[in-house]
Length: 138
Ligand SMILES: [Cu+2]
Image 1 (cartoon, helix red, strand yellow):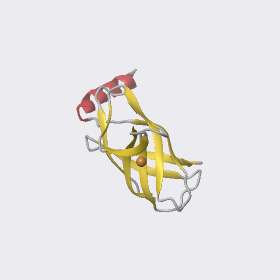
Image 2 (cartoon, rainbow, N blue to C red):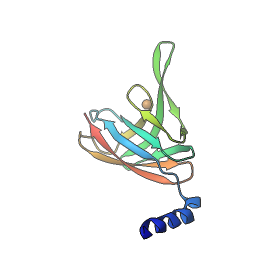
Image 3 (cartoon, rainbow, N blue to C red):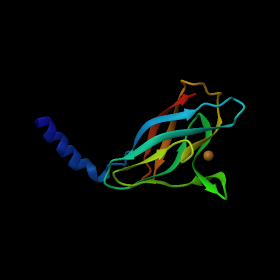
């Protein structure tokens, strides 16, 4: 009881400066042979807060750069378009999956293997960063 009251007080004190936090579920990277210079990454991103949050950039020591892409069909052809600001509305989720939204991860610093865990940093529009560990899968 005392503990919960204390945490309520702490919550009230710190909530005005609380930074956005997203939840990243099942983050994974599709493995490809070393000769292929890109990897695609997928996950579900949940925003359980009362305000929308946007992802403005991503980076990792394991890749030279990471972009968010949307796969779109145009005149019967599939192509990819960069999404520079991925907004996740309040109390909703965004699904990155094969054939749709994905992370395009350029030039792996080392050949990838199924089972590898690669860490990326997700930068949000309030300037905060979140670490996400992504598993390489077949
Ligand atoms: Cu792409």
